[in-house]
Length: 134
Image (tube, rainbow, N blue to C red; front, side):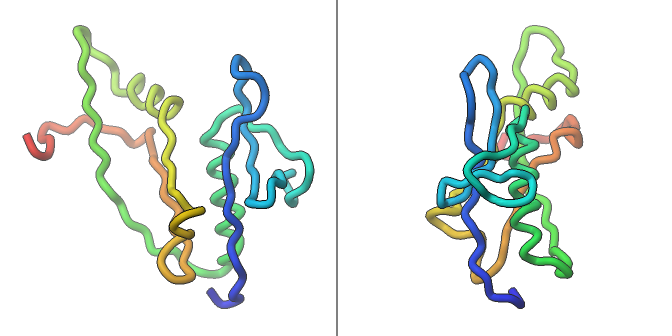
């Protein structure tokens, strides 16, 4: 990283009652993202994924002007049902129910001074005929 600056550890935390789930971005000093900066209160997100994307964008901002190297990693999902389940319903379910977690507080943001930002593109889900290790 050109301007050797310590990256913050960010968390997407649940906020509000469990029957009205909302999410906020918090840093390692228990301050919340307002949309501009971290402070005592912050933006509420209706979806965990939206908060996670903004958290990645905050971190990405520390690398302005640097072109990312991108990788694709296969993730395989099985759907078992007595009736056909449309692939769009599977993708929607996974988008709502899944969380991609990287333990940055224990392992850092990446090797060396790098920033590794994983994400799952559920809308690109497609059925496969071969499944590994069958």
